[in-house]
Picture 1 (cartoon, rainbow, N blue to C red):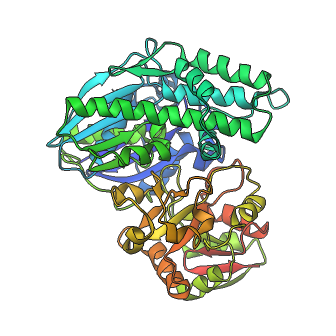
Picture 2: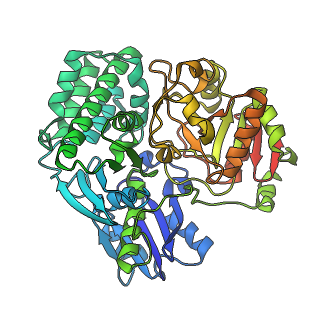
Picture 3: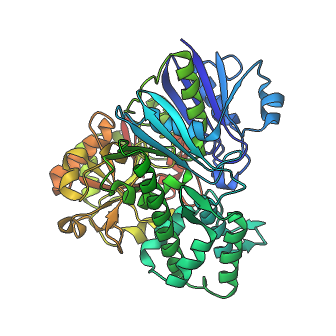
Length: 532
């Protein structure tokens, strides 16, 4: 059996993955270590994340058995810094597809689709997964086709424009697409805007067209900004609404055409940046012919190194011969109580033992709780290791949290919900496994909208829940159960543990800074509760 390092970097979302004896043991994004969001550090490579994994597991990328990359990591990083004797390189979309299929758990025929802004020379892949084998049946050429992701990314540049003082665009590609998506439900359909956007990206007969999405996106969005269209939030919301609708329409048309070709493939697995869009994923999940969807939790390029490592693992016959299900994606760094106390000694905090029922009372009383348990998550979502938890019952929570966190996003906050009560609260029952990773939205049942308003999108009444299982995230499930006993509500608000424009926190040091600054009222960290 082998040690396999899979790395990605050089463009965006640098990350490191280590597989030992056929099991993923660690995945760390570079931004967690550098404390600079990937979108603000575009050409980073996985130096610190690799060093951290090596520190923990005692094996590095130059003394492991196999070193693998996705195809775009720059040669100078490999040759000048790592200086490996040998390494393997895998296709960008093959790596995306491997993460989607081989962690889906699907044993049935599976349609695997990858869509993003582009790998080395292509921006989509379609694969048929059957009996553990994955065969590619469709690709495009980046320079001949259109890309939905590029329309989103370069629209951002035009909407807010260039900040000369900061030397960059205000909203950035691979960073702020979620803000635009969050505004979409507050807009409305505008036939003129929709048709303009459809001239930038259209679809027919398994092909997205025309060429030069980047140029068209810039032209459209910058022209609209200069004409004053984006001077108000309403104008941006209308643009966002029509961009979201176009994206949903194009993806659904594409998938329906694939279904006509491959009708037996009713399980669908996704990766690539387009599928970070939870509303698109919801629309796919609602298709009659789809039995279940799955989106790899690190669906962006942060997952490419993991995909490369999975492909090497399969070649060696050491794992992932058939799709498996992930218990969770808590694959980062953890800290002992002793290490935590060393960080705490720099402050004059009080401390008491963590008792779930007491913390549930704090939540029920309206306190904002920092939650730091075990190894941090892999991917863009806070999934119960580095979270901020709040009761979901107050309309003004969004304003209060954004004020404390100095955030200005329009994205609604998300609920965490006990699996046992999911069907009671949400309309659609399909795809609860991928919902464990907060990768799609659901419509909320009418009787719950007024009970949990802090986690419901105010315009379309959807929510992006994390389904919490006792097996997968036992401590999070336990605090939900204790809160349910007090409130008769098996739901809490969960947002990522970070302030504006910083990555989700890594170490206790970051958590204690937020406690000291009053961003949170109390901090649950490993076996203790700290408070001022």
